[in-house]
Length: 479
Image (tube, rainbow, N blue to C red; front, side):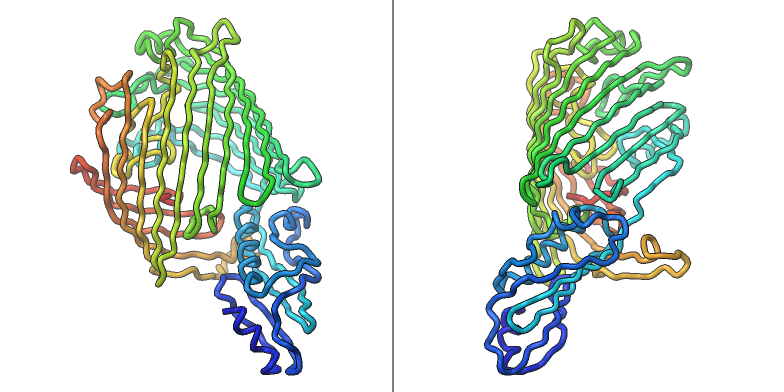
């Protein structure tokens, strides 16, 4: 479309603005009638507007072009659109808009306008100690709530760095900090993060029965104490591929009663353990927008080793490999399809319960089984979604909120139908858990409300394979 219009412009001798098919892209042109048809564009000056905090080199790192580049007309709009997506995926901006001015003799200037996010978040926290909000709503218990203070400084120093402090008292206590530096070298390919913390809890999940977590609580003392330190390195040579290496030291102490209740909890006679964890991750990310993808694909491979028999009270070594693949397709006429496949295999001579995570944790669950956990050494879960954009993205200014960081919001609504399936293989904890070693499935309908600050509010009605219906709420994209 862009190539056809620009090729004909010289014969018309007109000027104006092309509203690109890509969101946030405008292309202005001025051509005299005697010019020959344009075949390529030379990138001239690139200017930024609205980045009051973000440093220019952080922005430049996400652009697929540089001043002086020569780009074919057929690729010009695509490169601008992909650069805009890269900038939005940094989670530094609520809005990014490109305006390209094309001049005679194939020259061009590009202006990029930003609405930055709010970066400093000091606020009190109320933490519900459940796997997800649905399990707490199924059995509300305000005793299982902790209160604290959370401080996060996103885009610290304008360099996309992140500084976090977490102070939490009450039921489960946490005192932790982390500092992330995405770019250490001038080529902006190497990054690192450090974190450390002290955590202790008066309640602990020590086993699962009937696929429900069973907890032991001591109101007078802490039943788990964890001291940890972590160092993470990243290598991002290009835009879409990132390598991670993570080193972590854990020093854990549990109440003796926990081991009496479940001898397989640690698979050790020692209630005080220390061990190292080493993890490698490789991510290939070609999604258009990370918070709510509609096109592209994503793959994450994780290889993890817990324990190296270094300490006299080390854990029994546990090795695991996990992979997550997701594909997103735009079908046309506001219809979209997505599918995701998560798999995991783990190997150990003795499997400790506290490190076993099957289905029901984080993103690894079959919809319709939000109230359950299926602990296992190996699992696979397939999720599929067909959605329709009933309300395309709109921008609204909230007159009662000053400024643009919160006062200017975008939102969209999608309705969707979905089918999930999953299977676990467990040879250790299956006897008391009927959902182990069988196929699980769920299907239903849902509504997604997508808005700024990467927020997705989902409401889903699901019926699982065992005929149990449920209404569930989530705050992340379904796949």
